[in-house]
Image 1 (cartoon, rainbow, N blue to C red):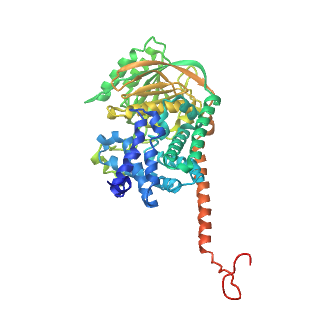
Image 2 (image 1 turned 45 degrees about the vertical axis):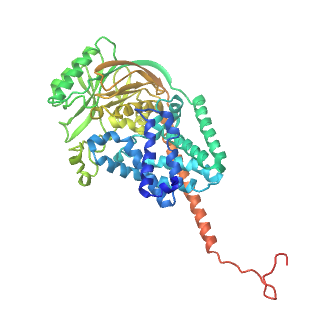
Image 3 (image 1 turned 180 degrees about the vertical axis):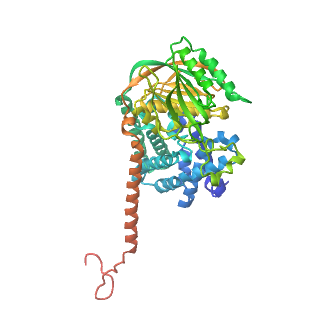
Length: 524
């Protein structure tokens, strides 16, 4: 009977196992939402990479594991991007190749207690470095950051208020490393246990001492979700349905009405009739309406996705143009090289144009909102900037009509809980279709989720808060700390390598000999 080691000797078998191991963390995210699974999900991948027969093979273990992770996190793109989904997963998965090498370097063989202790800091830091690089919106953005799996865990959300989703990712990886050491390295169990105790102590300290947002007044925010409207003249028919749903809000003392992404399919300057209808709705409901216009602009070239605020007299002039576009969905990166993606899937035929700055809007009675559009709610720096600029309520206008029957709508809605906890500001995730949700300043859900089959207008009583979280004040300090750790460890390894080489090159001194030619004995 062949042992597991012999079975894994085949490069293709080992690569397949690495891909499966890398895909395991996806179960911690919605829809399964097995949040506890994230704290051990990396252990099989770690155990595999540490036993790699060479550094080169460990690099492949990291790459294939990253491929599995990226493919699992974005599997819902398959019906639209087809084979290109595998290409994207392979390219992004390569970011984990150095991480696989790090795992073998620190945990391979029989590591000492010192090496295991270093692994508890270096491996999470390496993971954060990967998440930092892939968070660039040109590479797909920070969708599926490991810490985001903890969106429904109150103690984890409190940690997010201190160090953002970055701190959660660091701690989740550190716990996985500690568990892997406990399983496979007996001689290093003391630092592993110490790491687990330190993580628990840090979480407890943050729970007890971190400041909580001070709740004050409340704002009534209505979310209008029209559902899927397909076929000819869908933009006009969608507007009609949104108008009917909004009329139901009359007399309910609403402060703000929010429509989803692409809720208006025409530029309001080109369609003054729609602007007049929106103004009439604002007068009827007694609230300003935040719509999202997805259309070619009349005042400048190109197609923009814009959050536009409408009052009783029409558009107020407050407008936010989406800054971070969805790769392939709204533009094709390096179109001259990758433009063929439009022929194998539903990639953007024409690139959308980008906005240049974030905007905080005053909707009346001193209520200030910070809008984002769809994919932008995945970026912690955008919500942090809006909170720092004075936004009292964060808003994300979204639409997941293409992915209604996948895990994507719930995953997207869950991100708003993290953004709320990070900033200490309530957040409204309003969708055209998909899952709409509202969270308070600590990331706790307010009222019902509106599922993918909902066609309704729902009012939420949103508690407003004051003050600032440590994350808003200090920024992405876990990332900076991780980079420092990697630099220090790299410098230490460099010094150690130089010393070993000097020792190896040092000439050997022949032993002293007596007058008779025999080697002298010690003491003589």
